[in-house]
Length: 130
Image (cartoon, rainbow, N blue to C red):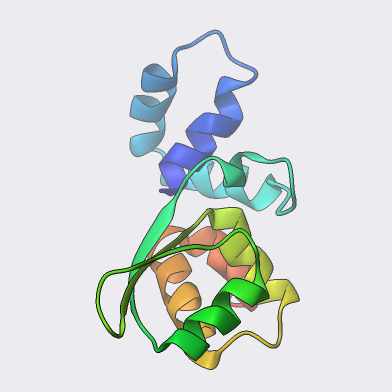
């Protein structure tokens, strides 16, 4: 996902196509990290133009707590305790940084997902360097 975020950031100021930018960034991990370290992690950035989708186990009360933690989560019930939960990367970051009262399982799941798909950004918000 980091290459896609960097591509989106560079597309706004380049004459090259998004595909050309993406292809050049796939081999330039350090360039991608540098771009991501400079991206503002707030509203109105390229971090809003993606979707993280999770399969979650929760009862109705836990899911309600999640939805109340941030109104930009979307949830679809798949079974008695099974939900499809989605949000943008920016919302995941916002919940991790600004919402101390979210259910612990949600915090752990978002942090783990962020560490996997965007380790540079995860390092910025977790104090983990990267």
